[in-house]
Length: 133
Image (spheres, rainbow, N blue to C red):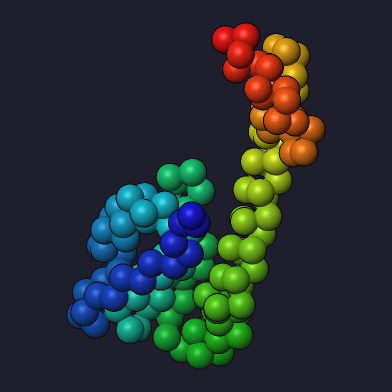
């Protein structure tokens, strides 16, 4: 399970986005989203969630956004999202493997079945152990 990558909050053109930051901050904290985009169509603000602390990364006006569109697109693109989730998944798998190794060592030290060691326990070991219990 990965957190949402991007939450978008769109306000009316007459509203100032500075007055609406609290709302997207709440959404990002509740969902643990990585990035947030807040806009009223004239101003654009990208926010980043680090451990529940929401920080503004970039704030652009409409004209600046048009000039620097490639940067904006790069941050919010599907490709960046896929790279992020792929890296997150690999890191989670590595952590789970390390956790499994620690459990396996603990189980072996306690003279138990070694349930987490693939292929090392035979049916006779399991049968003998269950008869002893």
